[in-house]
Length: 453
Image (tube, rainbow, N blue to C red; front, side, top):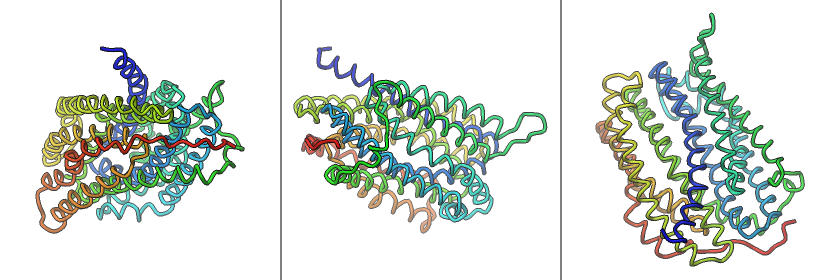
């Protein structure tokens, strides 16, 4: 391995491994809820999965705000402009908190209406609405915490976020056991609501820890001057990156949320295994998400310094990493099929559906890995977020979703056929990906020499 490759992989591993582990821990927090409820009842798994679509949609907005701001943060950090980094961080905090406040109000005051979007089964609506009211306070903590996680990664303190997420995972597992099932004297537990209460507690603790870490020496932290700071030029740059990323996230995310609506229409035997398959995919693909975040930071820092040839070389290396990661995700998912199919209490029909869904998800995971690392990592680092929005719109809204909706609501196609169609969007994107990459529209420096204050 030559010196350039060694430097690349050392930097990548120092970012991707901690970020990937943190994503894994966060995914496992959600997965533990599914695992715990999977031993409770099939309706509990289905209802909570549908209810969590609200936080899923919320996280699309938060993720776009943090991701769009993160592009600028990485470039200004690479430029060495600490004052601007602090001001940008405070600006992102304000947007993230505003977004979560809206979703808190929806989940707290109109949960039944939200549940009726996804299912018509009374039992699922009742369980899901109760869960939403209980989990709503956690929304206010999540957005701010994500901003701090992004800053930790930029400062090279990704290990800190791992410790926080590890604590959250352990606390969530322990609390789920007692709050869902009881197991203490005559206490019978809260059922699905117990899972919500544990989520609120661990998210609050994570936020407190993040804020405390920001007060350590050498860390960037929010202050009143930064909160009140405003620049139209920087705001314009922020939205120039944010809006395409948000459009892409919403096009993909609302489409993904429609998966739950479609499966919910097909009944609990379809909803439960689809929910489990989604959890499995979320856990398995954490590595590529870490690499994607690492790619954005690494390429962004080079572009902020006008090192275009070095950034181009990094982009080429990320292609090889993406293909290897996709194959790895596929292999791991296939190896775990017996574990997932044996653990959950499902009907015979639902168990059969789960095996078929996981088999197809192996192909999906490969395609998702390439798109995540290149389209969501390398491209936005230089401001090229438009391709993702267009590709998601065409592959999902013009192909996969219309066919799946017709199959479920008009032609009454088999559950597995509908599932394969609605999850084909990531695969459909692949033929055009390399051509876009070779246009090098992502090789841009987005920074300004404007003063920070």
